Length: 409
Image (cartoon, rainbow, N blue to C red):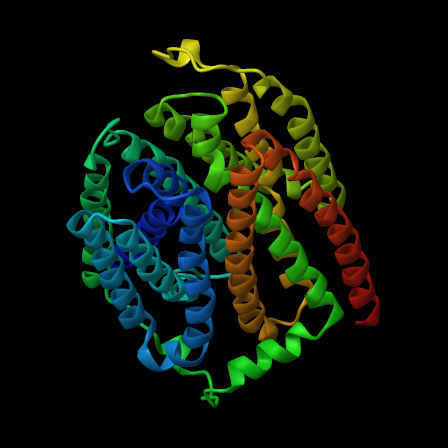
């Protein structure tokens, strides 16, 4: 029973953080209308979240084992609850910046703790991989749920949308209650020899100097630039370019998350039968094709009454299909990289993944926000073809480096 409660706590924790972290696109849209901030100002919310994640990730690498995984996760959930309460109680753009900084710090701790605790409730690599895949899939379910929770509270005027944070605080509190009711045996972690606090930093720096790792973190960084650039600004694109009402703009953006979730649930079966490199190249080709073919459908649309989904332009339904193309890329390159590296190098490697993913998310959001402000939404999304091409080159180099590493071994 304790094991079941712990698994439920880990899953619900990831769902809750998915809802909080990926609400940034909705909050950007609502901040522009509710708080009167500019698009470049609104784009800084991604930075408050992701830069905090990157910085705190380094700290957790040194101190998490000393604190204890369960204790650290309890602290992260308490900080996330406080971050939720800040929004409806203060109700300002400054509060939104503070909220995402608090949630980012909490997630940096929670991600390390959750991934480390999976080993406490699984026996063998197959169970570990199965639970990891389930948690990653449920993360995307949380992203999808976030759009619908917020859309239920969006009102054309006022700050009623901030009440969604009471619901999110309740979900985090439920995850905390499950964790508190579950006993955790951290003996496996305690059996590892103690290392100096500086060791994780040095391990990351040594690892980052390897050509294989440099190519890998470039691929991870560029992927997140694309995913977050689109995901964060899709509600605004739906509202300003497709002229959907704010509530429908958020709901339509949930289709993007749904496509990623479905794509990741199905990617495991595909990867079990085919080599990862041609599959990911096919994904990039599909991604580029959707951008080239679908975005022209947004040209020339003028504001008109949209009472329901029947009135929505076809681009609102087709563009989120990009999620299917993006879905397999991130987990697959991580899996390929971990398989090519010795087990002792996995923790510092995952530290690099967290840091560069966070920096990529900020970069994608800020650049896309600037393009939205100075050009237009359609051009901003069309220019995603540039990082798509860079990612294609990166995957080619990654494949070569992994092949060279296998030969050397």
